[in-house]
Length: 281
Ligand code: 7PM
Image (cartoon, rainbow, N blue to C red; front, side, top):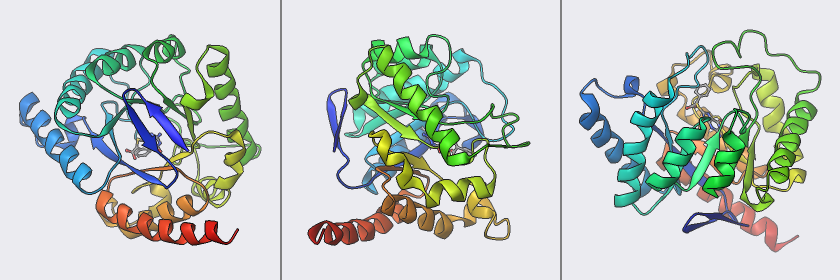
């Protein structure tokens, strides 16, 4: 399975790693814009060397409880970084945004993929995505980041998420976005309890019949802490790796992570295993 991403092609026949690059100021020391750019470039280069196929640049915090960021601020954070990465590194760049303005500016700056946690539901987002001609990841979220973890509730989590993603695929198709430009993501941690998240992880293969590549992100999230005695964020690597391996074995094509080197190692073991599975089926 291959995904056309602007002037690049992503080979998804084996699971690929997407490295998280935070362009929000709280993630770096407060050294102003240039320091932020330099730190971002260094981190991007390191993740590329460690084997990331995609660098995911995000300027809007979607953490539970996060407040909304004005579009101009998102543009200021994301666009210079995308420009520099695309000029200097041989890697696929995705932009974590729900804003049509950011999607279009990111395309001009050299981005290859749109990653939208709101699945192009904002006004003008489908049109901007169509105009960009970039592939897009459609993610499921219940509610909005500031309140989504207060009382997540579903009739049937798998069917509810599946129906939502299926409807968003149809909305994109209706707007003239080709199905081979789409990916889906069940949205771990986005308006879900730990039980909801583990039910989705256990049954990830259920989403295969949507017939588009599956992207997942569970790196360092609270679903990992929930089974590790509420372990601190920096100490969730092994738990996150277990989640990445389970997801890859259940059909995920792209794994979004913070710890690239460790995840690439784990996925190489998955790859070796999957190759043997193919050989005897
Ligand atoms: C809690 C929830 C804390 C989410 C931090 C986050 C995803 C994403 C993010 C994901 C896709 C984080 C985030 N998570 N995009 N953006 N899938 N497609 O872990 O799971 O950095 S934000």
